[in-house]
Image 1 (cartoon, one colour):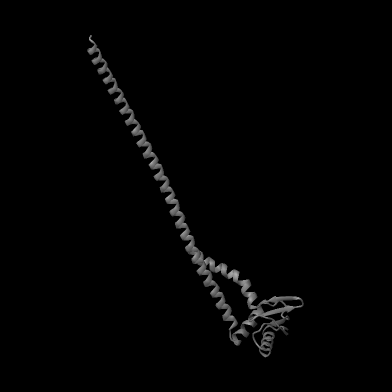
Image 2 (tube, helix red, strand yellow):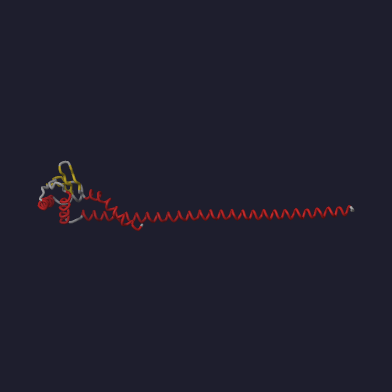
Length: 195
């Protein structure tokens, strides 16, 4: 074979080899591109899923926060209503006319007296004459031996029964403080049945 033939053959072999290497390289590059694209898609899907989860959690937190805020506002409104109801009831008793006051005081003393002979200490409501009439009527109705104390205490409605050193406080402040918890509990049970 001539030199030119050898050179031609070497060039042809080299060209085939180069084409083969280029073809293999293109296949490898394509495989790498496909792998990179698949990896990028997986990465994108994972990030998208993570973002979706974060968004869902954030929405859930926002919704819960709004619900809690609304519940708090509702409870605050109910508490204000309850405070007003108790204040109105308190004022209703304090401003009660003398006739109703007298009848209610006699009824209460009859129910809470153990001995039917305690000393009765009144608050600011009523004058000595009216309070004397209350004690007289009470003694007639209960066949008791109650006495009117000369002492007056600083409350606007109610009485204190005293027997020796023992006092039973039935002033409006004491009654409302004592009964309010029970009444509030009952009211909250009614109010919160639908919350």
